Image (cartoon, rainbow, N blue to C red):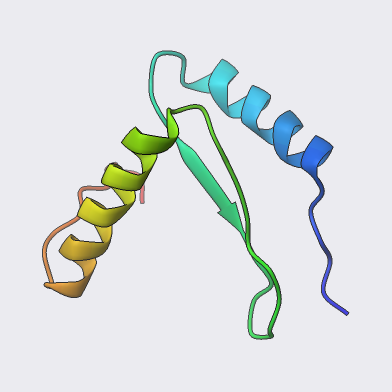
Length: 73
């Protein structure tokens, strides 16, 4: 059975991310790899803004567009 990440764990991760990148919006998705399961999500943005960001990002992925990543990747 895949490991599930609970609400408190997700809130703790969100707090750590917020501390590392203050002033930036983020969304974190966690899900089981290579097996069925439920995804979990946490964000510091407003729901409407996050939906817009997700749609725009998905459109870039689907259309083969470039999604900028930091140099270190």
